[in-house]
Length: 247
Image 1 (cartoon, rainbow, N blue to C red):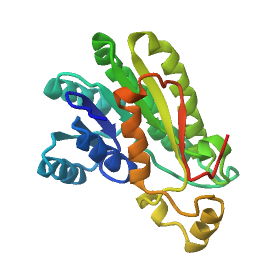
Image 2: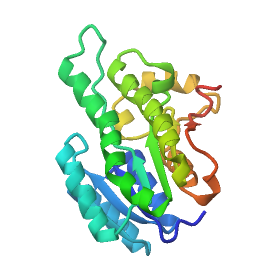
Image 3: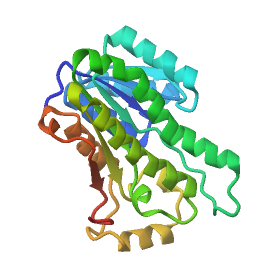
Image 4: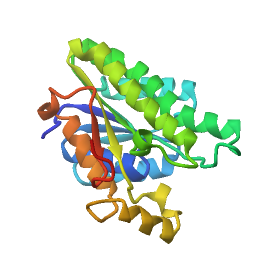
């Protein structure tokens, strides 16, 4: 599944799933534009890719800021000339029961997890339409499919990503552009590392494969959807959850 000659933009690329996606796309020989807020972490990922013989560049960008998105993507296009693959991976959580959830926490999660994907897609779609080829991959979540107590904002944002994925897929299919989503289950990342051991043990009991997933498990699915081999797949949600949710 070579991506030689392709340019990929990955948001949330400084850590976790986004970082793993960037590394796997680079291994498939794509040039990778890394976007996130932490310039130091981004530079480290870019250096890791360069040390392995790949090509990458870091672009500091807060996906909750529309102007930063516009400026960063303009810089990516200026440096690489095009964007073939967009991976919307940036995401946050601000968990709280709905009774106590503050409006600011609702807005922050929706803006970062959902609105940013709309804004990033809007900024890159022109490049894809011009060349009549593109791959848009949104990182959603099993909790956007089944809900989760204390995560009304997060679950809503991830469910919204699924609807966004299907709408975009229908809009751009005639131009040889696909839009799909990957829905991870319980994945071991910095976001989940703060959870209690009891919570993790209970979560594993819900997973038929009997283990927590890794960021690499998700990244491999993303790399497939970015490839020519996935050219007849669009508007699809690929579950990477160990069987936690089926059907």
